[in-house]
Amino acid sequence: MNVTESIRADAARLLTEGRAKMVIGYGLRNGRSVPVFLTEPQGADSLHYGPQCTLNLAAYLARPEVRRNAPLAIVAPPATLRSLVVLAAESQVPDGSVLALAVGPQEYHGVVDVAAAAEIVRKHYASPEVDPDLAARARELAAMTPAQRSAFWREQFAKCTRCYACRAACPGCYCRRCVAETNMPQWVSTAARGHGNYAWHILRAFHQAGRCVLCGACEAACPQGIPLMLLNLSTAQEVQEQFGAKPGLDPAAKPVMGSFRPEDKDDFIR
Amino acid sequence: MEQTKANKNTTRDATGETFEPRIVAFVCNWCTYAGADLAGTSRMQYAPNVRIIKLPCTGRIDPLFILKAFEGGADAVLVSGCHPGDCHYTSGNYHARRRWAVFHKLLDFTGIDPGRLHFSWVSAAEGRKFADLINDITERVRGLGPFASDNPARRQA
Image (tube, rainbow over all chains, first blue to last red; front, side, top):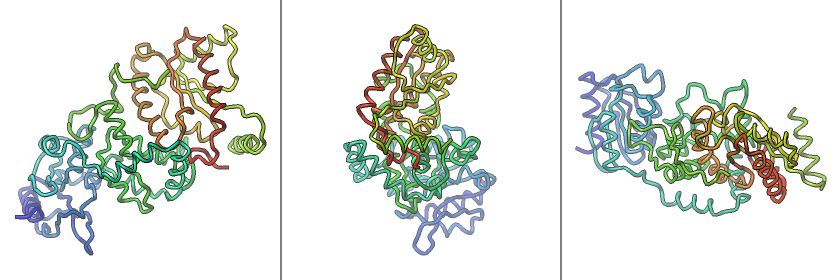
């Protein structure tokens, strides 16, 4: 049985046995991968899995209309497994409410709960796969002068239309009310230009610090091709370097930005 | 208010007048604000370029405050609070330190010169340190020149 067939069989079984009331998986429409929300075992044939499945389906777990169908099962490649563990660590996934149909690049790991998902991540996917081109571009940018970097990001952020697709695609962005949309007081200008765009992108990247699993869903969702992963990668590397944190390995992990160690480095403070 | 700020920026950038850095300092109520107060009551002279904003604790300083300051015309931002172990609320400064450690790198990566964002611990007894700090930052920012008006962090007129 190939991965797609295994997923179909397990999805149907979970729904039949009542272990899940909804299975979130990938389907195909016109050759493109789309999310599928199954509630009946008969629909299992609409599930597919392949390299084009880049959406991080964990983004749906926080939606009330999806949660209403708990217990849930979710088709989860390594990045989604990590997201699931991060969400569990942040108390966003009630115990036993989500199962994962864990898939690897080649293999199918079967149906697992959050603890077992973390186990799989630690064993097989402890370090997120970082695209070497992306890492090279981040290094290139870091080697520039601040003025050159400013010019680079000015051009990139100018493209932003503030559609917030990056936010919608991200499993980590689950706040019911986003600070980018509060207006009493207004912290982030909502006009799709200049400083408002800058503030939004800094805010988005910073709120993912220590939580981002580098799945790339935000950048893939961006209709304007803004290289959001450069921000995510540089922040993730910083977090790992300074605090040794790798998000998505431990469902009992303390939040990186919500905790501290008295011996944290402060060589940047006078 | 926005109008006034924009006008100030234009006058300063357009005419070749001597550049006076505008520094926004976010300080905590218990240590650095008291330290600044001590510098004042001790009649220490320091550069008048700093605008102090007092907050209960460094833990209260949201990174958005820093963005807002740059957006609205600051040439540099200083964030300062109690030394580690001295926080009035026990751990506010430890939490803040973690946040800044990542945040200042992110601002650097997106093109804000690290010389424009400063962090320090200044206790209520360190009036001298505060005065020296402000003088030093003012001089360094004078060297860097005005915050580029085309930096994406700056509010465009």
